[in-house]
Length: 303
Image (tube, rainbow, N blue to C red; front, side):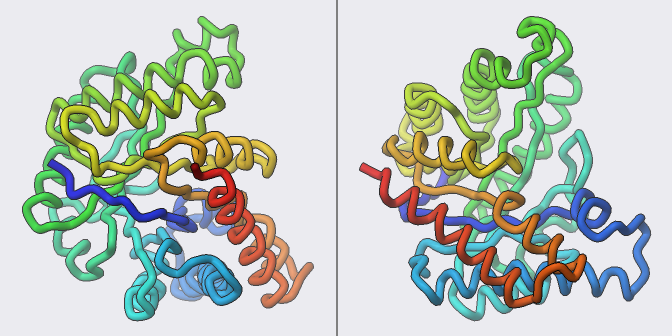
């Protein structure tokens, strides 16, 4: 059974790799040393925004970062030394099928950083490719069992991409899929993975528009004695108003203990900085302000 987590989690995720390298920095892998250093330096801007937000009011005991080892190893070490909550991504970036970024060495890479959470991102649709789901589940069970064995907390980011048949059922409307089909598919996925032996301490969940869907998600995550398991809502790169709606809805439900909003927080400030439209400090301050805004909204709506 999972260790669980009860404290609020205000997570700033910037573990994006494939999309960040190409979309933000305009680089095409494989990167040379100068390009790798440039990517890492741009992620330092995000981290400095996080630190400024904590300095001006985001509660430190709830504040955390999610970053990758490839471009954020130094950030992870600094955050740990500074007493911040950390989450380390373990999955191969940009892949439709979950696999370990460092293959059979995944445990050694987690142990090298001792993060608060080992985090995994998984695309899983219970009505999708059965063989794909089976392969992913086998790897996830290995990771979950490892975390339980060594006392490492485990964060599971669940994405449920629509199948072609599901999109046809909602006439190709993504918003209709999110509202009408995705909530039930998420519940089924959580149940299936739990029954297989995958036991996260925190589920990182795509935003839900209806409060009762949030309540059902928490009930499923906490079923059969899993009362310490928490849920956090992710931003999915949505616009500010959509993120606010998801935050307010989730925060009103006991069991949702925080959020992880990345691209909506940092993308435009970092892009403007790299394009020399703003100074580094202006980018840092904009990131800090937006991250602080999410924390304030969540706290205001918690029961």
